[in-house]
Each structure stands twice: as C-alpha cells, then as structure tokens.
Image (cartoon, rainbow, N blue to C red; front, side, top):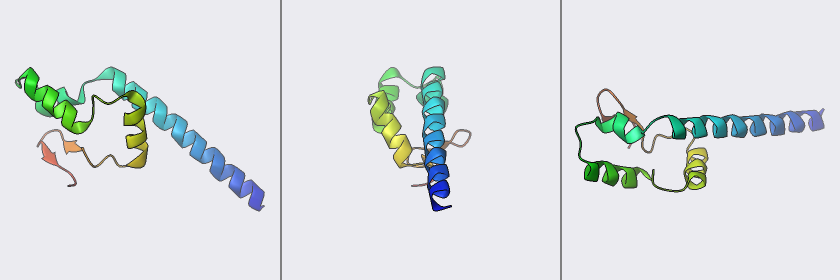
Length: 88
C-alpha cells in the first residue's frame, strides 16, 4: 500500500511539472505581459526597464525555474485593471 501511494504521488508531481511547463511555454509565446500591465502608451525604454525588473529578459529555463519555485507567482503579479500589487 505504501509503494502505491508513493508511486501515485510521484506520478502526480510529474504530471504537474509537465502541465506547468506546457502552460508556461504557451504563455511565453502568446503575449507580452509588459504590454498587458502598462498598455501601449508607455515608451520603449520604460517597457525595457520593466521587463528587466520582472526578469522577463532571462532565459526560458531560468524563468521556468523561478515560476516553479513560486507557485502563486505573486512576486510580480499585478491586478491588470487597477495596476496594483497583489502581494508585496
């Protein structure tokens, strides 16, 4: 019984990592989170500064590891309509 539970937990962890990887890679290819946060009226220099601050210029693997370490991704999460920080 113990081996069954360990096997199922291991499978669940693997499935969550694979689904997280798929979701993260789709999000990386579809949109620009900086544009969603600040809109289109911001200069290119300000967008680049925000992209650096959020770590969006880092390599894909680095961003994914950071995404896995913070499951809620609350470090950079903003409410898009009010532009306010959810957690500080």
